[in-house]
Length: 536
Ligand SMILES: O=P(O)(O)OC[C@H]1O[C@H](O[C@H]2O[C@H](CO)[C@@H](O)[C@H](O)[C@H]2O)[C@H](O)[C@@H](O)[C@@H]1O
Image 1 (cartoon, helix red, strand yellow):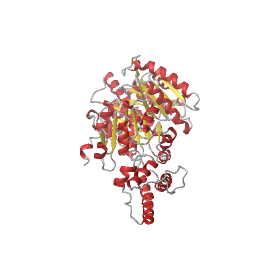
Image 2 (tube, helix red, strand yellow):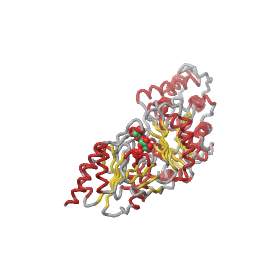
Image 3 (cartoon, protein in one colour):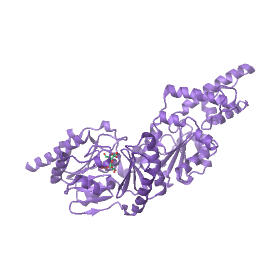
Image 4 (cartoon, protein in one colour):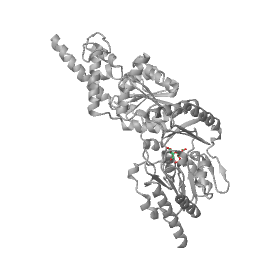
């Protein structure tokens, strides 16, 4: 019976927050990738063949392996050779241990384990590796919230499986069968593998949550004293997971929509970027009789994305379009860049500028405000900046860009194989600085003040401050990156979000523009409509 254990998905988020969880440690097979099924098939093929042959020699019949009962009980989640030994014991068979070098199929614990591995790799090669999309989407979302992530697995194939599923960059730490053998870690149900992951992440067990689909894994999480042990029930075995000590059993990870429906004040609808209509076809009807207030992201919106931040120079044409627009309606540039830096790049004095993702705001008449309260994070930002520059000086192409209230660590020009090192440096610094949290952008990791403030809040603050919170005003926000989603969400009820191009996630924007040249065309059209109305 599953229902009593399948608590509402959003309880998971609540629990993470209540318990101040900083890190998520996930088992691979059955939680992240759909390889538990593939493992089970490989085990069944190996054992059923072996038991049949052995039975023929002994003139008796052995019960073949049952995936539902034997696999779950004796094999799932534990190191390969332990699985062989456990299952054979259930059939009263005792074999010599052998050595890892034993030929696949040799009648030893290692030989049979090696044969299972040959079958597993064959199956992976034939069918590829599928990840659970709910897990991947949820993990990306949690990483944006600044949570640290580790993958654990008893499997020595963990790295290859992650690579086949394209998930290598989703985890900062990997503790698998190979690492376990090297460090002499005991397999599940001993907690060693989880404890090592927490150690490598630099968190206490009381700051980490464990996610497991295997009974032995849940026992291991419990034995390790982790703050939260979440059973992931992909096979209808919730009761068993709960019995082994899971605090909560989920059948899938919450979607962003689930997260949002948990917060009725922000019922944000998200869609695939490809589904969005072009705003160019709808501008007149959207404006209706309202006056627009325009909020613009900088990089990827007013200038194309380029290799270096200093190369993103505003074109004279776009500058002229902005100048003319700002003559007929309020215009603000809301950027992840340093406020002074983006102001220097635009060089127009009739605009508002919100820099450092909205923490630092200025206006045309010398107005200046820092409404997000980020000043207290300055010492942490200074320290993080210095450490990162030190740590990353030898990584070719890495760039640490300090903004007043954020640090962008760029990896656009870093060799693929060194990107992980960059992220690890960022995560190590963040582990030392609770005043800061992690953000993601286009080929950047960001360190921002750990405060409930973002571009969306800055836009709402500006609307209030400029007395634009009125029914005859239509706020329009245009942006291209994940950080612009907060602004799209804030305006979803009473404004228009316009996504430029696409990013990796679903979007809360309602319309799209293809690229910077379409942004320019849109702003020109908007200016023309406003001017024309004035003459009507
Ligand atoms: O909010 P925005 O105005 O879009 O600023 C976001 C980040 O933009 C810059 O980085 C991005 O643009 C660079 C130049 O095209 C590109 O090289 C980089 O890969 C992009 O992430 C800026 O340097 C960051 O500080 C902003 O946070």
